[in-house]
Length: 270
Image 1 (cartoon, rainbow, N blue to C red):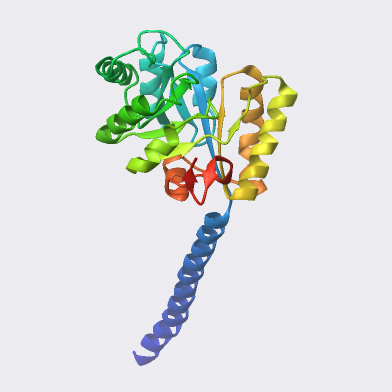
Image 2: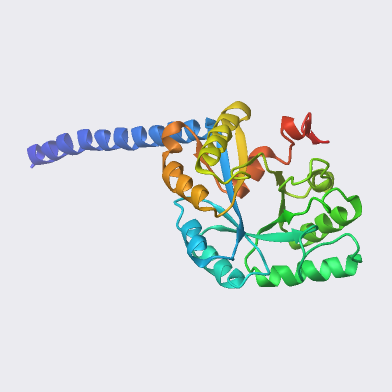
């Protein structure tokens, strides 16, 4: 039945060509999309001071994207929240108290290095699954070279990153991390030093503008009512505004441990 074979070939060959074209077009479209996303300004969001209020913690956990959750170790909900955050695919961070903060885990200038190391170990045990650390307060600690060198060495041995919250303009924390090649970032914008709705909205706009200006932004917020309301409203709109909300690991890779212009020169921290 040569005619039947010819008919079959006549049908299948065009279909295979169409299928091949469709697959090829799909791959091209996917590549174009990835290229577009790679050029978009990047934004990282960290929420500090978690573990103190279950209702607000739950709202942070429900944010629709790669929020990094910085959990205080001396809070009632610390361990449970870290477990839930890990299960939800969020980045878990230890929000390490530092002077002038007090408490059983706080790093303070008068303490010997062995006690500082013990407090770090204990704090990490309270916040399981932490992949990095940032400082809670710390204006009396992050400007001290020796304890910051000790901290960065400890984090490097544990394969953890460091985020300098920059609560002191004279901080040496990020520079110390950079010198030893520890994966690290520095905060660019605090969302809610003033927790009023108007001020939080203004800071969020400033963060988006800074991301467009320098290619990326690291912003830190807190679980204040106005902050949570704004994030729930505005975060889903970021992609449409041309902003790529990424997890903190991707931002570390994007910045490559280089300082932004506000924090140094030629990529080196001051």
